[in-house]
Length: 191
Image 1 (spheres, rainbow, N blue to C red):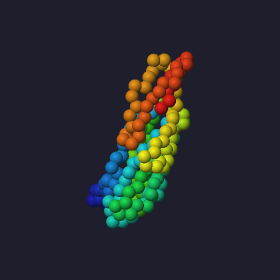
Image 2 (cartoon, helix red, strand yellow):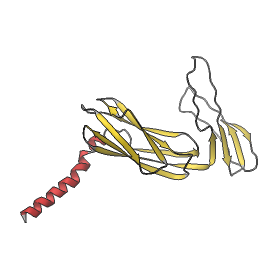
Image 3 (cartoon, one colour):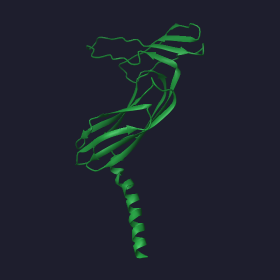
Image 4 (cartoon, one colour):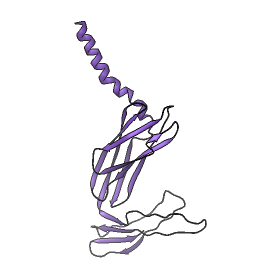
């Protein structure tokens, strides 16, 4: 009887301890969930899950994998020393998938101890809006000089669809939408 009680306690400890033992890894991430919101088909959509090594030992991310092909991942700085930062970049595959999508990203840490951290991303990929090109690179600009890039926005479907406002989260970048036409079944803007 005593052997059965000991065995039951040992099994309970082995199943509970790994979940408590991985909290140290989760604490390194500021956020573990990201909502991309509603995005256009072909839009370049990435999010950096930033983590910081809070510990005296080096932390190494051996790999990461995702539960859905709608998200690809890239690891920035997989070996992170004390108080350094790294990131797991979630790339929403808007060119291949559409509709409501989401993925669980499992980050596998092998140093200083084995742990797994699960991150979530989700969003809605529209099929009626397409951007060409899907992203732009402004590059280096001399101080006081300006640069301009144009993105074509093509909406298919509702003829009374319109862009009512354009905002930038960067105070040094301004944007405006200029209607380029309304051929049958399409609404075209230059952004």
